Image (cartoon, rainbow, N blue to C red):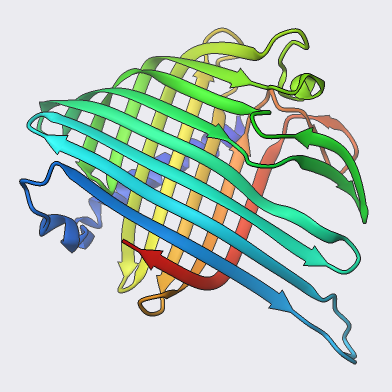
Length: 299
């Protein structure tokens, strides 16, 4: 319930920020050609972090990390119809002499929202979300690599359903679906227990309510803050235990190509079994953080 309260407060905060930041609406969007049916935008980013120590009295561990991130938007608008699509992909590795190379980021997501205008800023919608990863994930104990705990399409999440949305702009929209289906698919039989999927089944099927919030704001010149919040309540099992997926991206544009990026992702799913720091198994809050400077190409 504590996680649910945090998620609800986050959604309220995002809505409040939008009301107080109307003057920061993307000027490029306002100047766009109104006759244009498709709007395509993309960012390709390579981040690198490196630290090195030699005869350093305070000590330290040499390390290096590299991350590739892709963030594409494909938006359609004609008459009363709109179709917004976002594709997110990222993969990264970090290296330390004691531990060799290890994965530090791995995600692939497609978010799609088809809408038909019902009133000003309101739409009847049908949404689809898909999430998975590119490579195997392992449980590490110190320098030793332990058991495999995830893999491509293990898990993969697919959600879809009808709903209604409030859309202020491409930078602020809220979609609520009171009747949505969700499939948690795990291709590797040995990993199904980790995600509460029966060993003899490919997926666990859920039916419930979904809330998606997207908000991107310009905090100041060349600094953008992007928020993606997803909540899901399964009517069929413990509907009070809401699944939470919150991603925050902070982007500082130094010049045309150089950027500084920071990302934090919070996940909570009471059907996912984790090995906690105290050695116990069970659900818990998952946290991922990325910070780095690198090269970004936009189109």
